[in-house]
Amino acid sequence: MGTLGRTIYTVGFWIRETGQALDRLGCRLQGKYYFQEQLSRHRTLMNLFDKVPVVDKDAFVAPSASIIGDVQVGRGSSIWYGCVLRGDVNNISIGSGTNIQDNSLVHVAKSNLAGKVLPTIIGDNVTVGHSAVLHGCTVEDETFVGMGATLLDGVFVEKHAMVAAGALVRQNTRIPSGEVWGGNPAKFLRKLTDEEIAFISESATNYCNLAQVHAAENAKSFDEIEFEKMLRKKFARRDEEYDSMLGVVRETPPELILPDKVLPNKAPKAS
Image (tube, rainbow, N blue to C red):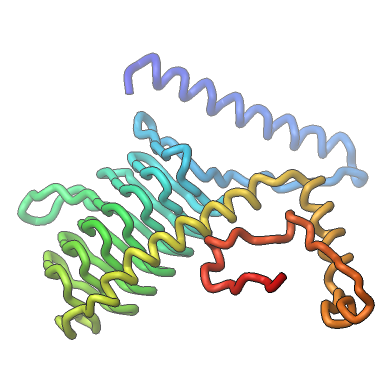
């Protein structure tokens, strides 16, 4: 960041601090009648000097997630609630159609003892389960990282490989394509079946569809939310069998119907 950039950054910082100082002064002047609201500094996307997150317009980032610094998120990917992606001493790259599930942590390492640079690179259509930790590693396309798994510096997971839930993968371990690794420390367990390899792609697609629903819900206004609450209350006690006996037909409002692609096993209603 050049001199001009640092000057602009500093001016912006002091403007924000001045706003908070004025708020505190106003509270004091109101005395015992004031209502104090604690201002949250949480930002979903946060620059780190000249390092700016780049998130595709079709990606979903949950409101409580944090993407900091030199991070790229590709088309159709989803970063779920409570995740932290921190690209400070190196960069993070996430491909298309990948999901980083709730409370997962993705970080980087500047380099290892041998001087090798260690960004974190995650490919396309990857599923990273809840509360996983990925640190300075590479995960190729269409792989699966289970819930609570930890991938340490220099780990390389090849395409169509799977890391079992709770596994601890030690530094510089390479997991070959088509294998399942698990345990602490992680070791080879068995080969993946064709059905399991297909499931990896299916899991990524399902999360991509689900992310669209969450994105739509998060974008709704207060009035839209209140209207849907009223509809749900009205239709909550509907008895379809009793209605059919009376010859009453009640159509479910479209606002209360989830897309079929989110519930792929939903049976069609008989006409």
